[in-house]
Image (cartoon, rainbow over all chains, first blue to last red; front, side):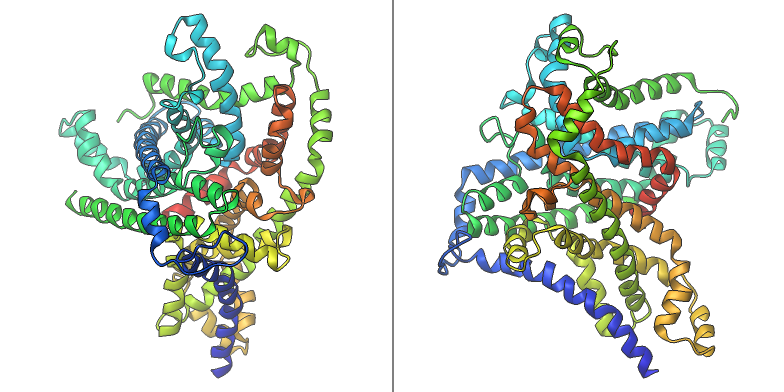
Length: 287
Length: 273
């Protein structure tokens, strides 16, 4: 029996040591350096909470938080509404259901960066051409070049790609509902609208929770799309938090400062996840 | 519910919607096969003459086969390393959850899912370059380590549902813990191994951020990283750029055509767990 205990310990130790070395240790280092003035090279001293105070007074950082939240919340809502609609469509009586399921899931397997590059071209050339020939003024220029509109371009690309995953999850949820329930409700004379809100939606509530939490968390981390499409621009209008930490930390010599920013970001993500889970789970219970 | 009738309004909407999904891919293929003059006539129309030489030019320019090889090596070895190590840890943790130490390990590993990567990003680059791990081997290790949080969560849930009697019977036959794992448990994990393998492969193949920050040698670049690096050199030669994008996307799309069912169910299971 002791040999068995020993074997179990050996099974975990290498992986746990690796995990500590390459995950926990660098995370602790990041927290440690956030209290210093290190540039990423050369000597450093402790500066206490100075970096943190500076992040709160940094317009660029505040703007990155605003942009990231505006982007993440908008995209989460759009993605969930469309995913649910598409899943309902794919779950109804249509021809070629498996084919369409395959098509709608396709974006999920593609590289986010390359999809970003492809849409870059669509925004720069295809849409303006369409806008010109249809005399639609708002389409006539590249929205990625407009500081006020560029974020919408990123929302579109992120949504185009993420709807795939959320749709498949909602579809899995819809398929857990037995058709008997619908038959009973149609005998009772419930309309489609009523049926959705009082039967379908409550029954797929757990899937709604997973989708909302995963989507928001992913979109708060937005990075690849920014790198592919705007590089944070025009100006600094589409700098996400991840992008700012990457950019300032590696090319701006702000190792310690961006580490403090990353710690704040970490706290924000944890808080958002907890709050969101609480609210959504309470709703699940009520329904 | 009328069982046989097709719901035509929904059919039409779903069909139109699928065009929105397919259009960017169609566009990628047509642009990849045109030359600049054909582009000037019409961007969207299917080209009359197919310029296959765009591909050979893009292959030369981006050193496509090197990048393809790098991406393939990283993906294959990440999947193998992940499946072998992560399932082993999960087995040990799942069978000892009543002990404090293993319970702590479980929560320690799983709670790391909440830690956003940027907090690790700056230190890990220093660390890997100091230890000579700013290369393909380093990437494989990091993928296997960073996937652990999520995979432990998925594996432990599954292993708990496997009855212990199987192991007890094997133990009476004199099999040791290691042998039990490889001969009894690991084969039983096939469905969940498929899920973890598919998710890991998609991640390692498509990931851009880790190769971007970690790799120091140009020859180690992965397919997504190559597209980024050559973005400036493609400049306005969109045909070349798009044939390069298409070649980078194609391997996964081809795999998807054949393994669609597996991939979709794998991804779904991973999320529902």
